[in-house]
Length: 208
Picture (cartoon, rainbow, N blue to C red):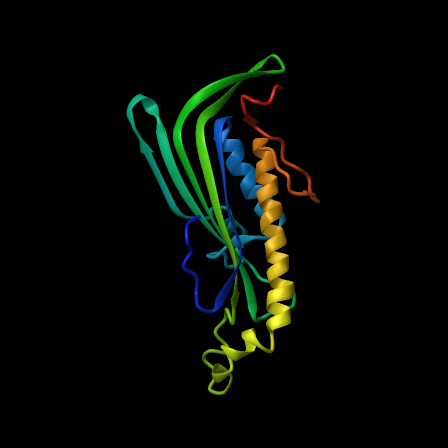
């Protein structure tokens, strides 16, 4: 698993990677991830309250085409969420998507021909909690001396047992959601509390 360099004022809550190689709709996959994150109140780190600013999340987007029209794509999303009634913690999700050997494809479903894609997708996620995200403690003449001590001692139960567990759980709900969308077999318990977006993945092992 790739190592993520995060701020010294942060702790990692979860890290996972999933892969899928078969037929799927790239457009619907992108929309499904985007809508799930919106439903769970995640926004871009660049979001400043304007709804239009929260529609485009890419901090990096690259696309490369090789012979025969085969494509390789990368996009990175850097997401944030601030827990309710809180001015000390901020949740982060860094989501890296990488698509390789992507080609146009077609499938027949319910007597209709659908234009989809064939290729391999890899999604890697890091979830972490940043503390003193506004810098109020680190810049305060008195509090800055305690900023390293408080997370490890005074706020230890709140940070490590409550906030870290909450973010961990949400990250793995997202993982289970993606696995279900791609129809990847999973042995983890899963509960989707919001409307599930229909899958547009067509793995060869699963007969429709």
